[in-house]
Image (cartoon, rainbow, N blue to C red; front, side, top):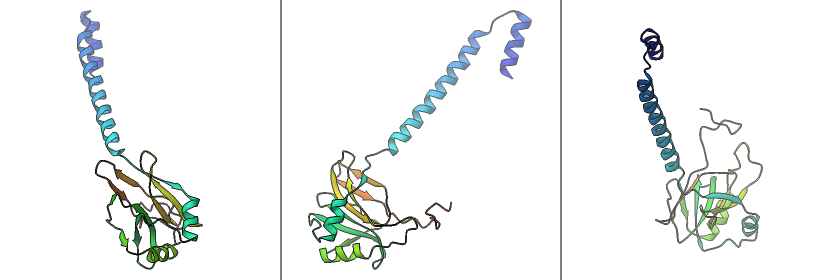
Length: 178
C-alpha cells in the first residue's frame, strides 16, 4: 500500500520521493542483518564442543578378550539387568553421570556389556565405538545396541556429558512418534 501511495504521489506532483524509499530500504536491510546475526549467534551457541562416536573394532576385540582398559571409569544407563549402553571414560575427565550409574569393578563392566539390551528396533549387532573429543582425541569407549547418542565435552572444565541413547518416543521402526 505504501509503495502505491508514493508512486501515485509522484505521478500527481512530479516529485521523486526517493529519500523515503531509501530510508525504508535501509531499515529493512538493517532488520534483516540483525535477524541473521541473531540466528547465527544462536546456532553458534548450540554448536559447542561436541564429541563423536567412531566405530572401533579394537574395543570389540578388547571386550571379547577381557582386556578393556582399567584407565577408564565405566558407567551404564538403563536398567540394572538390561542396560541400554555402557561407556568407559578416561579418569582425567569428570563425567556428568545424570542418568548413568557407576560400575565399580571390571567384572561388573563385562557383565553389564553382556547384558546390554538388544531391543532397539534397528539394532542388528552391538556397536563398539571410541568416544572422541572435538579435536579427535580418544577419551573413552562406547558399547550399545543403540548406534548413536550426543556427546558434549567442556575441555576447559574437563567434563564429559553423554546423553542416554534410549528414546521412549521411538516407535517400532525407530522413528519418533511426535
